[in-house]
Image (tube, rainbow, N blue to C red; front, side):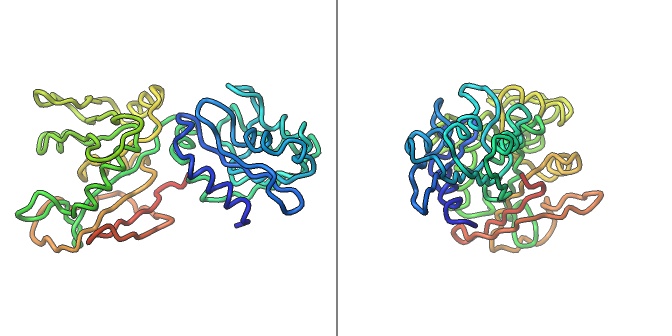
Length: 315
């Protein structure tokens, strides 16, 4: 990857979530080998391209703009970035990803029509930075992450103990909840554990996520979960219409299978504990009717456990 595009990605990563519910875009302007302007999307304000152009001023003329997502081509809360880039005399634009928003897409074509040289890098890293927003805006449903904790032999329960994984993994789960718009389980999990599903012991800059239960009620007395009893696709569309861009699914295998069979899971997070449970018990692997080929497999030690991350559907 080009160093300047990598810098744009780093700027966007440092500002992650700042512009929510809008995507975060990083931009770097380079002229004659020198960075003359850079920036990332502001909260409620300028897009990353505009921040970089304002910093560069007249030095933007003849420069190359490296941006993590193609400049927008529509009037929203700000003017079209593509028009401003062309007007500033930028000679070349390198975009890390396409804009999946049908209302805003087409910026590269507009720039090319204005005589600006354009290049699409099509970077997975750039797409992944705004993966939840990309699914939400293009598919009309939340980005769904299925999280499970299992033993080495695939069991979702450990004999004689409440927890399968260690304290570090449990803290990571609370961080995942804090970053999600909604957290959900099935009614089987509700009846067995009556979970709270809130984020505890971690920063929650956007407040607590919405906490959902899919399935038929009733909910236990005093439960603070929202019951969602309709077909999964309809419920996800309704949640998306309410602004839910990301959903962390922490269910058992039954609801997980239903989501997977309906092709509604985008990413899998599997916390694997160094334990052989043996015997009978709930198993992670649901009885899918057909195999699922996962991509971008990554392993990360988390305390004594290992976190496996993979995509069912790439952003």
